[in-house]
Length: 347
Image 1 (cartoon, rainbow, N blue to C red):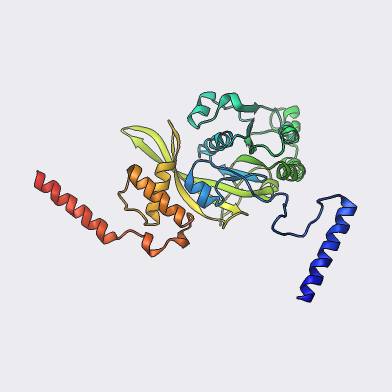
Image 2 (spheres, rainbow, N blue to C red):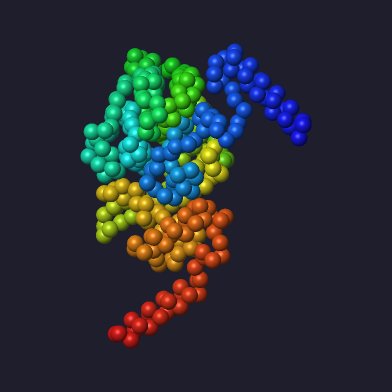
């Protein structure tokens, strides 16, 4: 105990020396009342339970961190970004969008619950402008208010200033974009942590040249965003949901290929409805069915309430599902058989 006390005193003395040299708050000994810059204390719920509580694992997008969403074309990246903007507004925060794809449909904002009158939209011409505007937003955003979400759609579609000035197909070197992003995010990451802001970056996938084995895809912009991001969400697949002959939505799989907040590589199926946005009810029920905590044919409000109750009890973690939570497959089959017999008698 004496050695422990001496060690604790030495740490406090060292922290005091660092604070004297570099200013108050430069260093501290962690304790119950310690506040660490960048520690996630606030989140922005997407409103998709299985993503918020299982895939991301902390209840939503982490404030004070960078998140990257990427997929092939038409994967649902922008739709997920719009859900995040709506989530920030629901929490009483600020929502800003750096839109460089020149493809924003304002009527689609309403589908995902975004309040157009409370949304800041900027459409810069170059990557340098995007990053400077993001820095200005963070510098002027109030500290200690609601959550702040800054979305960028998208990295891949944003030219550099050199590309804009050089015209079509200028050969300025493959590393220019990477250098710009690397330099910018070294400044943006600590600023976002200070203001408790989430920077959500949308990116596209590209095929690697000459790769024969392993993952053949990558994302534009070098590795700066990969390193800066605390969470990277990859959207895969896209099984069509049809009503009659028309497509009304699709089921996608979202994987956390990187996660500093919860175990990585968690994945879940999520449904996107083109008319009403992300379907939390379907996604929750399917996840509960995969865990075998509700019957496979369960649907409706009662089934949803049961699923959410059991998922909350196990913390949305498959490893914490108890034997008592599991449904009895034999009982489920008997129920179906009984229903079939009753139907036969009525006929």
